[in-house]
Amino acid sequence: MKTTEFIELAKIRNGVESLPSILRRKYHVDKMPVRGKLKTKLFFGFKVLALNFKKLFDYQNSLDYYDLKLELA
Image (cartoon, rainbow, N blue to C red; front, side, top):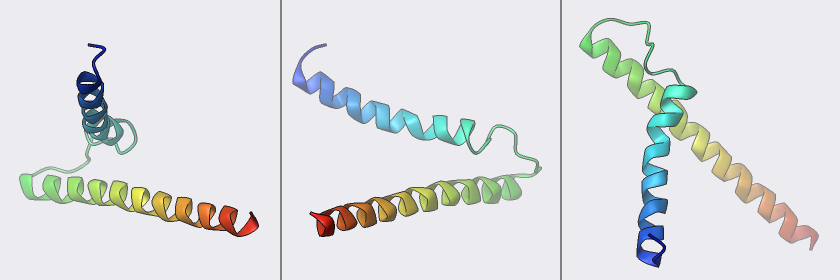
């Protein structure tokens, strides 16, 4: 369990398992106020879209922060 191969696989697994956890905790996908397969799929898609936009905005903000930090140096 202390080999480098296992550590790399554990990092990948942690990243994969964090997505459903975030969707459950922050976006409450277990308690959607809709009925029907189509509406549920649409509602879930919007929640995933919101998560992707948040990740995109966080990434853009981190780039701006590092650009500003490089200009000051």
